[in-house]
Length: 224
Image 1 (cartoon, one colour):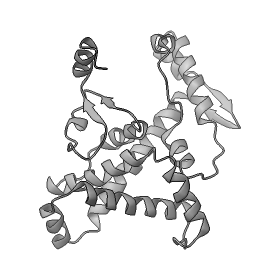
Image 2 (cartoon, rainbow, N blue to C red):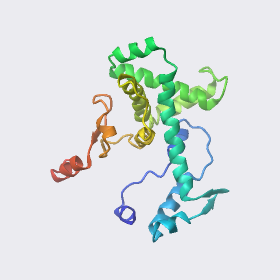
Image 3 (spheres, rainbow, N blue to C red):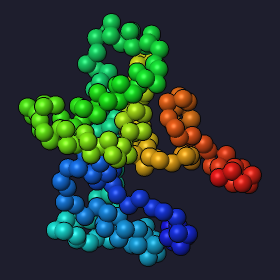
Image 4 (cartoon, rainbow, N blue to C red):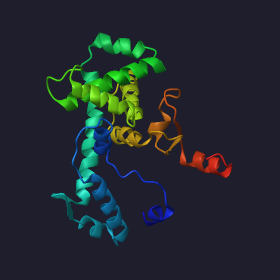
């Protein structure tokens, strides 16, 4: 961690919740960014795991501990996994068969991503909200200028298709893997040795998913 701090690598401190709220222009008063920075400092200063477990601080009236961050990550992962599994559970047997036989194209994936985007905004606006609500138009316009979560939403659309084709629901850790894609916007490469990302179909994203070894080899050739 200390080497990361000293390296000068750009770090995105925002939590997924903060990013997903900001890109739509919704009001959000939280101290997640400041808390994440402080927890990073505490990790570096801690001599052992027990020291880290004992860390506790208050920002904006909210208490933060290591467990706070672990619980947040778990809840976000669970909510992402639930989106995929819920979409599958409401389908009839016939609909599932149609989906398995469907040839997904980039255009179709983008269309479904836009539908998911619409549903997400309406859900944030509250029960009874419609696309005629001025707040919906403002949120959509804001998102059009900062589509940072587009890769994340598109990956979920593909995840639903993948789960159907393999006749299995999203796995226990899949929510974490999808969540990491929120930070992939405007990047050329996404570097990870997790097999999850190697299973993502090529041709649907502008970003390339590569392993750590592939990245090192690219650096050696002066590509990255």
